[in-house]
Length: 443
Image (cartoon, rainbow, N blue to C red; front, side, top):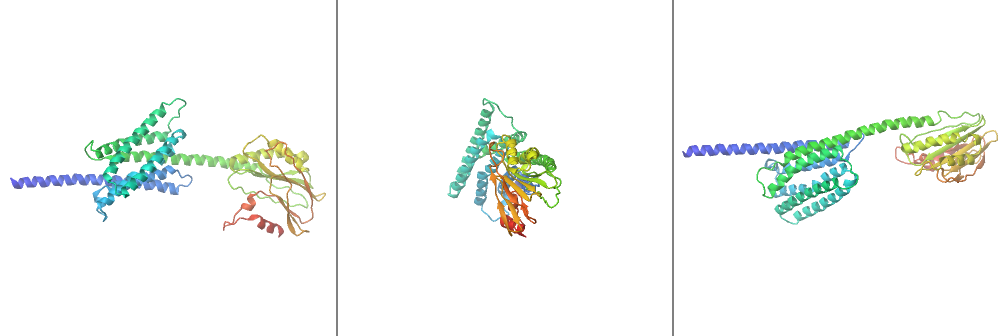
């Protein structure tokens, strides 16, 4: 009888051991799966070609922290290292204190503007609690008491979030619908929170049983992964559409620039246009009068991108209307200023207009807040800066401009430019600068 009893006890012990082993394996498998997904999200962020959504980083951090905490709680994983149980308990506590921070930042990225203020306060409270919890543990406060306090704080935070969302839903005034990503996040979060509440009730000894929180987190990870992938691909599509629109805008802007330079006997004109982005606000154009006379305009719209390019297109139309008095630079700029005033608020235009009269060997020049004309005279042997500036275009309707007349000799060279010329950099990241430009003009 005693031998039979001993045999039954041995079989029962083996059965319990196998059950624990299966549970251990399930936890480790879940941790490895979560860690793999988290690292994939961070890799996608680092190697993304067009867009880098911060939700990928926050999602990856949450996954890594949770996976490490899950592994650190398993006896089989701990046995691989020569660390005490207390060390792993402290690792668990530090992760418990900090994991809510990237989770809160993830949620902040999804929230609309009227919810973000609430989440700012929530993040601040989480940060304070994390700092307090880590310092308290370092000062020797019992981890059992700290975990108990964390359970109370977590349950209270969940109640506060639920209350805020309910109150916000029923507040008077217009309400915005939650985004698709936010709804998916909330669904996964609620599933996880049910498991978290269960785990914390276990910790408070209110309930008994196995802690299956990792199953809820797996559901949450799937939802987070979906949200992150959805945002990433949506941003990729949005950027692709913007790129196509910018390419169209670039082609339209290119069509507004002169396709060739005027040909005058005794005068050589060269133009170079290199925008810093797909579309920009730099502009140049010509007003041909006859075979001996031509007007040249160079302008720069403040800012970059499509708005600046649209204003440059307006400038082309306005400039074409100045052909009747092309020989009077001050009058040309005044006409451009009147045409542009009141059309935009946050932008203005600097411009320089040079009229070349080969028959009289004269130059007439006027500018509106633009960098000075550079004139390299063969007779003088040096470069002069000629500045005849009035106010920038488009800001003051009554702005006045004046002309300066310059004698033109054979071999003289003039340079009209925008400030991007001096800011251009070589491979060593050295700016071209005004001095190099003058040296080039003198050669």
